[in-house]
Each structure stands twice: as C-alpha cells, then as structure tokens.
Length: 73
Image (cartoon, rainbow, N blue to C red; front, side, top):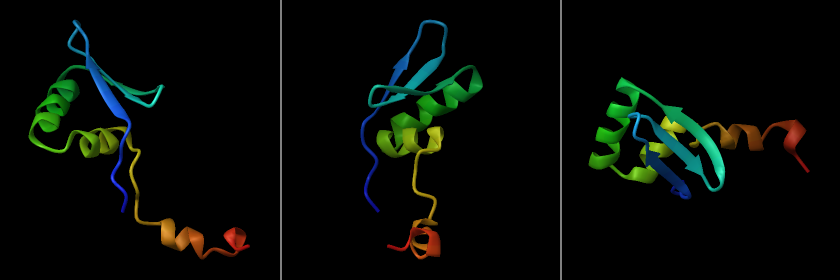
C-alpha cells in the first residue's frame, strides 16, 4: 500500500487545527478532537495520522472494485 503524502496541518490561536491535502482544505478539528489529534501526530507518522483523521486512506476494497464488471475494460 502506498504511503499517504501531501498532508499539512496548521494549529490556530483559537485551539483549532486545519488539515489540508495539497491545496485543498480537508477538515478542521476543534476542542478535544484537536487535542487528541495533536497528541497522536506527535507520537506517530504524521502523514498516516492525517490521512486517517480526514478519511483519506485506503479502505481495503480496491481489489474488489477492480474486479467489478463495471470497471473491466
């Protein structure tokens, strides 16, 4: 599985965190979710953590979708 890349996050003065992917805004976390996210980003791989928190990660169904008749060439 390829590693996610291109995620960045910015911590704001109002204790919120904005996550972007490339140039697109992915999500904004506030309150306890922002605190949990920051703790997790410090302890793990930041790209994987941001991919998981934004929902932008492989879900394991790609091989099944590739075999679907609608996707055959």
